[in-house]
Length: 66
Image 1 (tube, helix red, strand yellow):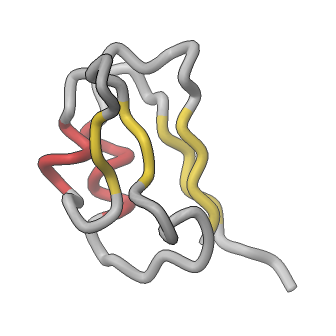
Image 2: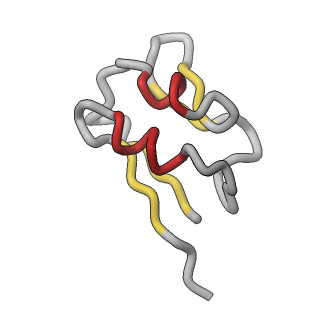
C-alpha cells in the first residue's frame, strides 16, 4: 500500500503517530511524517485507522496496483 501525507493540510495533531507508532512519527515542528522505510509496502494493520483518526484527513492510503 502507498501512504501519502499532505503536509499542506497536516496540523500536527499526532493522532496518526498514536494509532500506528511503527509507521508514523512527528518531525521537529510536530507535523506527521513516515518513519524511514515505511514509504512503500506497509503492512501495519493500524495504518488505515491512523488515516481515519486524522482530524483534517491529511493521510491517504491506497492499495498498490501491479
